[in-house]
Length: 526
Ligand code: ATP
Ligand code: MG
Image (cartoon, rainbow, N blue to C red; front, side):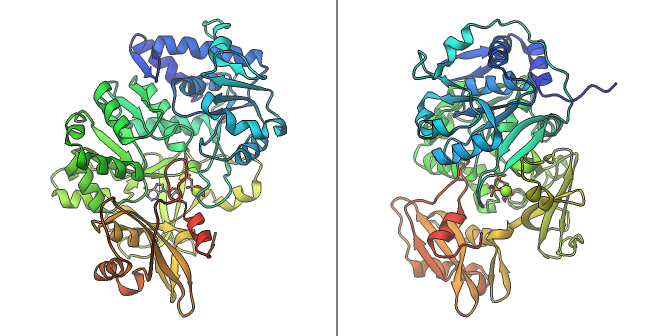
């Protein structure tokens, strides 16, 4: 019989091969693989006592902490399903997700309890709330460490499991609307971990700083592939540039994944703090998504001296399905050419079939500049949306998951993201990629952040409007930015309106929520 692909095997392997090695470094505690495995077993026993069985849902509302990491393996080895919650939602959002998923036991970080309190008595399935960092049981809340202490550290009997069993219900970022519960199986996460280990060259010498939140699919994957290869994982509670550089220095961090908005903030910080960059030179790679322009890649590689890799994916695909990593056979290319390639979403991960198709479902010709939708077929594609067969059958058609992302393909088969279907601006019948326009604005020295959205226009139907945040100490007028954009873009693509803002609305994973901007500027295509 085949051995099913189950996620707990990764920790089993690490304990066997790297038992005495430091596995995780939290704010207060560090544990070896052997020690963390003991805590994982205690956690599983506690959950069993609380009545958790295979298939039950267990929620986590926590920043990146060692306690959250324990949850990954403590929940999954019971065949239970982990429901990680975005820490930046509202109490009403938590109520929706916890009731929608039928979460039975909820773990909460003590600083986030007040997010649950207002809706606590409306939770329909939650039976116990266990609080990380709480010293004593209080008001029906259970103190985590004391609770954990009662249970034995010995291995737990695992239920009979199949690789198609669910590992997680991961709610999407909600960039375009209400979050959907994405069902990912052990198999999907297992294969995603193996391919990520390969593409990102993860080794047991790696030290990962968890910058991306683990409640988001991108951060969710790393505790699997960095554990499988016995790397050390450092947790970061507050995503602040000074703190990131401090941790990098302290622990010799070799790899980080982050949203480009965070990477941008590191660039800003480093521009004023030369010391920071000098002390962060053990970094091997920095991995980010969201189609940054080549000029941004160049700054990361030349100012910070870090190798930049772009990845592309989404919750529904576990998440990564393409990467722009430079292949060995491209090593000879001039730097500018490499930056251009790295700014694309790149080529498909092993095991994923990725195509760009037009409205008839035909693949667009490479190098035709024809825009189509990215579709994917892979073992890492979700089982569907939880309790939402309608959205599921809309998303997965004829065996292909339809991403809702639009792209073109170059002559070498590299995928270049044009935009989300919902973000494309249609002006006078022409498609305008908001990402392309933003890329140009980012080239202006005064621009810190820019988001381009459609607003209604009498003559053209829609017109691009940019919402811009300026760098501290810099100035630029609306006219100046429009002229700048026109000098680098076809006229119809240049924004006709620029508004300035102090900040842009973002999701918990650092993505700009254009849906909110559109609402604010009276145009919601969503
Ligand atoms: P929701 O589905 O709830 O609206 P979301 O799509 O933002 O939220 P995620 O699954 O976290 O939720 O994000 C995946 C999306 O992020 C992709 O579909 C794509 O639009 C965008 N994205 C991811 N990687 C990249 C990349 N490298 N370049 C451009 N866009 C990217
Ligand atoms: Mg999405």
